[in-house]
Figure 1 (cartoon, rainbow, N blue to C red):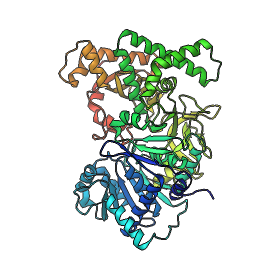
Figure 2 (figure 1 turned 120 degrees about the vertical axis):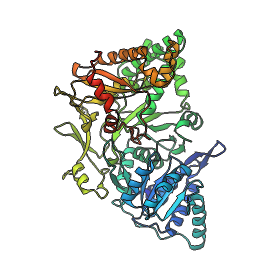
Figure 3 (figure 1 turned 45 degrees about the vertical axis):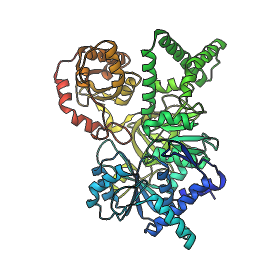
Length: 597
């Protein structure tokens, strides 16, 4: 009988894919420590036994507030093994947002990583009388808190003295997790995901034969993000791959060299930053290095297009590509550890230009698509079915169709049963025929490849009545080394404009080369030469757009959008309404002034 629950999946892994480095993490000494499948299994059993003594059982709720780390995986497997429901919380959330979620779902226990997260709970503890126990991965000063290591030790003793508890009767329709969507507007909604939702998505993705026992993944996205949880955790386990946890997002470049992964799951922001850094380095170097880089880029992209289209490759084109690869691309691949087979990208659209560059460099990015509500994968590119700009064909067992208004609808075993305690929102999202209304706009080509155009609610309708999707325009800026983020605006306005966040590292280098004097970033972005430079960048993008899509004006900001200010979701998407409201005065002034274009 095929597996139906996450505990069954983990048990199968221990039995059929034993390995000495099932999990790896960086210790306090700075060295990676390997945990075998059997050792992880024993820790999960002991932690589960201790949690059961604290009263955790079938249907009970347990929150997890922690960064991506090995203990997160232990906590998840132990909680689900008891038939309980876990509620993952993004570690970047502020106390007020954490309190809102906890008050909505009312868990009895929270597992948290360490002092920083404990401080957040302490700040709102008075509002959480239902929270009976706090378990921390690292020691904290929170009254009554117990460490995970203490619980594991207690659980080991209970197993020795009293034996294991009877197995929990779990079925595929049992709720495994309540994941609160970050959302770009409004309050978060709790997505109910069953064991069957997760397992069906794992098995369908595993059927694509992308990952196997010879693979090792570097995990650094938050495990509270459903993409990392399914793709970087459950899928890797099921395939028998090893999982190494990065010390943190900032240490990923160093961890890549140590772990030497074959697979990495990420979001587009990582690839945008890598591309901007590579491009900036090439342009800042000597003329010969700059010439070599762009020559190699042309050879790689030409070779890549012919390869993807399965067209004959002339020997001379192949020779030039091999030279480009040896002189340029091999050095880029070495920075990933030298063993990388492919990246997975999800969570937001990836600019096609960036994907094409990575493909040319021999670092394939398999872009996929899904939502928290779909556990998450609905469609994905594979090595056999790969088209840059698309998110691939529908996953096996998944149906996708396009509604009359262009919205993407999906149906399959990975679709959530609904939102927690929110039947009205459930009815708005899943219709009577079981179709999930994704809120995304897109189209299917003749071969069934799905292309995402924009978010339905993000569509801009100008004062002239033109419907404009902002994301493709924003993606046009993402290969520019002087641009970090762009948000296009213009709903019910006479023309499009944008808020632009510079890549400050590259911008400062530009200013220094030009001997542009400045005392702070606020003064720098207002300097006439800098404004003129961004005008030129804007003009280049506009030259590729239809007249009604062109961005006529731009506000250059002197700081990044941040999570702390509520401008970004935990998955690094821009909260458009929040940003527009925050910068309303600048936006209104921009439209009130006479344009430069």
